[in-house]
Length: 261
Length: 261
Image 1 (spheres, rainbow over the protein chains, first blue to last red):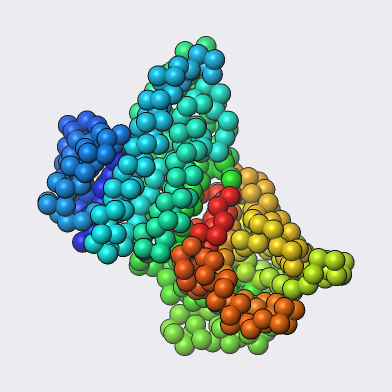
Image 2 (spheres, each protein chain N blue to C red):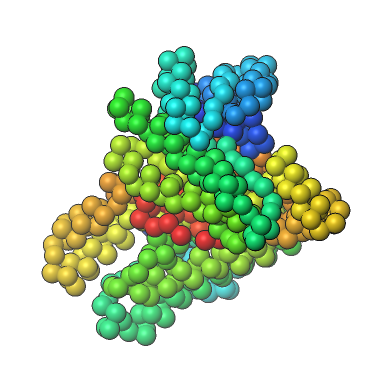
């Protein structure tokens, strides 16, 4: 498996988070220069250092994905440092738990802005540069199984991720003939800080303990165990490789059987 | 990619056909011993012979996937002669173009028997033996974009392929606790004898030139080129690999952007 991405430059947004860090480490092991980006520059630096520790190449960049000019600045930096980005994985995302009737417009807008607008900004910016250079590439957006299920306590999150699934379809078809492959993954319950935080919040809403809340969630997963970051990273790596060149605009459920369509 | 399937025994039904033989070649090249099972003993022997000439491992076996007895014989012989069948790909399938109003019930029964019952019998047969032996395994069924969309002149085929997506979901749920994963791929317009035969049948009905007809259908593919058996085989190989460990019950569209849900 080593070396599938040798010589390529990969951009990972939300690179300081659970899935983002896992993806960055995986791409680093397979030979890419990984531009680890995160709203937290110091968080990005920690993960970039881990990629370098395992013998890979990485740089760290603070990035607010909701801002097109910030994205352009980071892409300039990465291009100067390592070359044109031909692999991109959009992991930047936020979540919060609110009963539907209590969900504020502010919370709705913030979530859509980061999760959906942020994904659009990054996909478009990366694709524009690639097309201008006549280069081919692969882009994977991290959506969620929540995109395909009802989410009574996170309607904003579910809607933002459903938007990502549709955005990926449109971008996938728009860019297919330019040799830019765009797909998504829909993870389920992944063992990350974000998932832990969700269950702390849900326990506030449900009155169950945090452990009980998480345990019930895991019981509902057909495959019978919580998902690891690597479970997601393996599939992301497949979709970034030439093995997936005939897949266009798909959202692959990597969720242990929680969702289907 | 290395040898992802070293030591594995992989059954490929419809192994004499376009997608089946392409998949068998890829899996054999990555270390699997492939059982080439086909209704035609001659075709099975030919493909197995070609694979062996390349220096890889393959055994031919005749099978009628619509017969429980025939499937049991195939699996019992394979376990005895080669070893535990822990991977399976069901490619056996038939198609016949005819107007909906003229579709005879006997043709409906035949198509459903080969494409759907045949898939069920193989998945169940492989799984029963693995559960009994306390072993894990992975299976991939070949469905089709026709299982996602409407097909006026192959209603029986489309229904059978939609059924394949359903049996994959149900069997995946049933087998998750035994450490088995079952997934499907939905190929689009693949450059195989079956596709060319369809174009010939359709052109007989419409009087259109078959080449022009094929060109028109390829123009409708967002990616802009016809699919190769290798495009399908790569996705199947991924779903059979450890990297797809958390993916189960899914149907991946590998179709250049024709279908999404």
